[in-house]
Image (cartoon, rainbow, N blue to C red):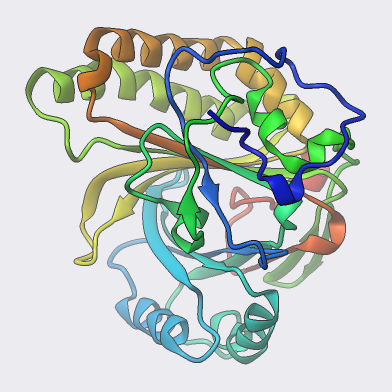
Length: 343
């Protein structure tokens, strides 16, 4: 067993972990290991919002941009229908070279968010964070099918110690060794017609937490879809509709799309939080997450080592100079729009 924090990021602690040094977790978990030369990654969420048929031309243009020089090391795509009846297709892209992203963004931002884009009735956005390697963590129950930022990592850890207890998420972030990672105030919202920039504060937190039930069959598949997923969906709906008073600026519950554009047996929730503290409070004590945790534990206890469900997450905490949020032609319930007024 090893620490989730790799040796080259380990420093003398001034802030203690939630567990003693001899803690032994009840089941295995793993983290993705980045190349030691990687100092910062980029996570970019590019959204397309519409009613009716998907504007295929816009997605084709984005795919061409991803394939261009300095494009991402990995990207995937997911969708949801929001409460206003719009379909959101979100393309998530990852870089481990911020310089490559900067060059790519300089070339392709205008194409995605241009005032001269076709009058197709779509809204578009880009939400970007660029955490330093000390500012994010990953967690997987199985070390053989990476998702998200783990796809651009170099390797898997062995079994890690910092999991299966409240506070493990914080303890896996290298910066937590000597930084409380506090949150700041409400985001600033700047409107210019249909174009909106949002400027969150220090300590903005992003979590992407996913499920892959593609390998489940029979009773296990029914157990997940009938007993676990509805509880998860209820929690995701709560964060989307009622999360702002507890520090969740926005939440999306997305179904991953396959290469054919059809929904796959994979999903994830991704949410923006005022701070890691706010996310922790919801995770540890709110009835909606207690219910999710309870349903998941019941599932895993019943299935035991034979469980085929794959679970993962990635959590980042960033400063104000490591964020970029821009929306064009989107309704007011999109992402961080309105967060400055209702935080």
